[in-house]
Figure 1 (tube, rainbow over the protein chains, first blue to last red):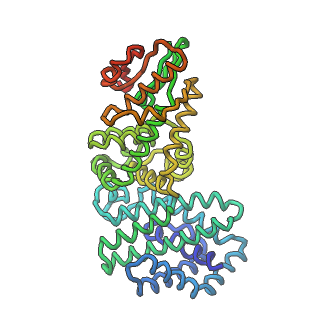
Figure 2: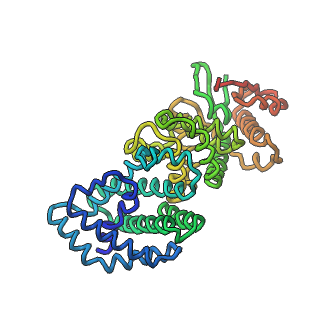
Figure 3: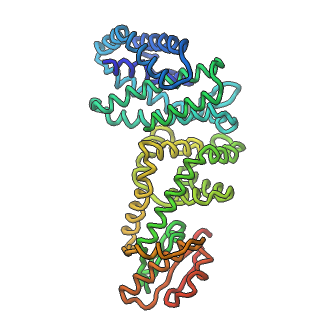
Length: 197
Length: 229
């Protein structure tokens, strides 16, 4: 059950930063999950160091603490006949596909594609690798889970959801200059390796 | 006339078969390809950041839509870029990817990049996708075998024979040198001819230096073919 909670709040956490339209936004019930996610991220971010393992462990603890509220939101979704994990997964695949088409404007009349070619920003490069890695994994699991997720796929999904949340936190810490570029790149590198392992 | 094909021919040429020709590829050629892929792959992952910078620099002056190409076209452009920059081993990897349908890679790419994003791909997405594909569950360990299996399949479809050679002593007996792989391929052919009583053969290559290397072997006539022209 903790795994399902992690997936529900984790999937799409990072891509939401870039996405122009959140597919889930059409469903009021998902807003509750988004709100819970925001609170979890804020809480973990406030006490986060620069160690990925520590961040991942803090995320797991925070999700456990919020588990009753997440479960309540999930139960409401289920009552409407939807499978929250499947819905989160499909939504994450669509959002990553939208971002990875690279034509999303990111400010100053530039698209993400312009930035990737023009900038020599190592953090952006690492985030691009992570987005592609998560997208590849989510597409694969989405196919596997078409008619119910086997336990190993569900376990992998939980791990990916936590790593996506960790990506968000590292990125925020870097934006707020709580960690320097070198530390951010090293942490993001560790995350992408972990996603693909 | 029996005609043997070398690594360069296999990677650069589309096989035009005349009915009277008997085309043969030795298992040694496939072994050389496997080794070169292994090396190229290792370097691609090790120098990925540098290679990504080449791609960024090259494409930064080209506008979004014009950058986007099919994956095979991008792979061909990567060959040129990498050769210019002195990364011949990585260029070899891209040459093979551009030329052959590598099972699993092509299927995976179709499922993710092409079907979900677009059939025309941005080069930066393509190389990041490839890096991730190779790293995913340590795919780089099995990729060289997948390449060889895919080439074998295409050869069989084109009725090109694959001669399995017991090469244990051949490679070990060779001293090192830039033409070691060429001499190895030649010795494999010689061994096959000897074992099968073949008096004369032709060896098709794209390498202009190969006739020199083969000078001592009178019964093998080297024919240099320019397939890229």
